[in-house]
Image (cartoon, rainbow, N blue to C red):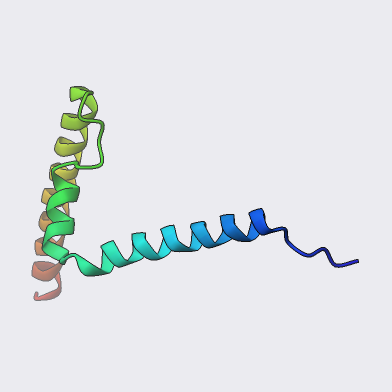
Length: 80
């Protein structure tokens, strides 16, 4: 037997859909440069926890350096 969703369930589903649309609109609306800068400066880290904040900044910076080194190595390797 099919159950009709109650008004409260429908309202919660609508709120979830609106949150998802708002989140996606923020992602699409911002430039790539701003998103990368926010990622590298660890805007998503807890500002009250300096270990987490600086740990994320250092790790993300090192991963960027490693990516650049590997990309240069690959290009030089393929150009032989």
